[in-house]
Length: 585
Image 1 (cartoon, rainbow, N blue to C red):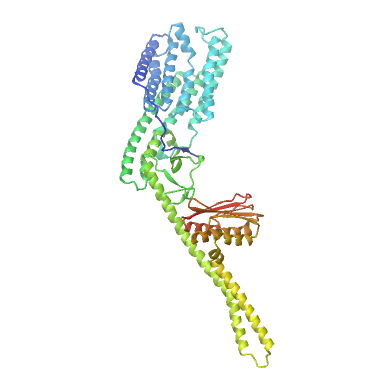
Image 2: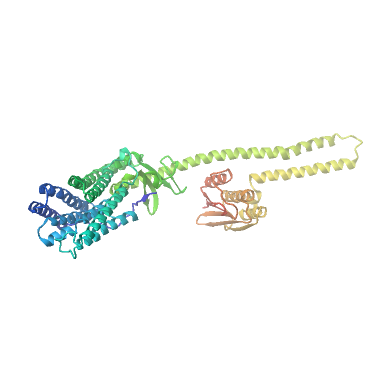
């Protein structure tokens, strides 16, 4: 799904190059410029040597400048030194224009190496590291094709003037060269596909970073076309070469524009910091979206109380997956997730901007997370209150039905019977009257038992009289399955805690008997660290959910009403484990 970041200190930042290294790069760049021009103008084999020298330096000089700036501005990235190395290797290939044998041989030996290095630079953007096995394989294959095959064909005498020629076998050297051009063209096209194989950024997210990747892909495609043109002997191969060199030179220019855009964007972060400092409680999505230039930005706040993500209004949200064309940056504080930024995937290429925005908004994001958690608690409280009222109404209806169908009817019948006895005829014997009175007495006893059951459903008398341990023993004895009971609470607890714990166990055992199809159950109640933990487990079917049905949801409401938390683990076929934590000062 997503990339993660943290606001924790990351240690010492890497240092950029010193002045000596930068000046050496500048002097080396000027030297390559002069040497290439001299070699081009002095040689007799080049067509339009001035144009050739210009196009050659159109590649080398921008790569040197861009690499030096990238090395200076982004010392943590390896891309700057890699671009500088590519420029100098490209410059060395100009030695094949020389009439000096050793220089010509060296230039010819390095002739294909820049193509592999261009592939490396483009696929390693923006960190300078090859991320993912496909890119690593393609680049390693590129170096093998450009280096090993070039050495093989040189040794076979593809260029008789080379000092590295060992034998003269032009036919074998030509076949190797054909395979080399085909293989390198294929690798370049694969590299372009890897570059361009990403979700297309939205119209509002066509940032220079995304355009830069497109430029890289175009350069690789043109380089592949150039090799194919040379292999097929196209009539306009020189025109293709000029266009390819122009495309290769555009890449570092686009890279410089990307650096400039990123620097301008980071200046917006300063304004963002001032804005958030002035109004730390305002909605963060709009200023963050403005700083990132991504109107599609979405924020999700981690709510540890519920173990889920929520938006600013407290509604539960799900973070985007890797196939949604979106990316996610999770901001941590003290090792815990705080906020997730979900944004257009093209922003992944601008990690410094993401880091700057995340750091600037860290404290304000924590405030917003607390507000989102408060709204979520409020929504949960409102839902819990409605469920409690509904449950109370249903409980009153149940009591009314039980009284009407049971004790009330018995008492009405008893009153009628006593009336008949009082107005009985003189012919009725004493024995008959005594029998009728005994039946009336039995009806009174049954009615009293029913009333006690009703009262016990409202509040268990055994809990008030003898405490939680004895009350739970009574429940365990009446359970539908054998129950292993372990209660370690160290005496009496506050009434609200005992009542909540009692009903957690009572409702859990009822659910086990009705739905779990379990063979055994266990109840463990412990007290430690200012809280009572009630744990009920069974070996039944599992699949219980606090969000479905009224039983577990009602239990969760009852526990949350006293400041506690109810959690349920119930994998299908793996039994159910219910745990309630109830504060107990």
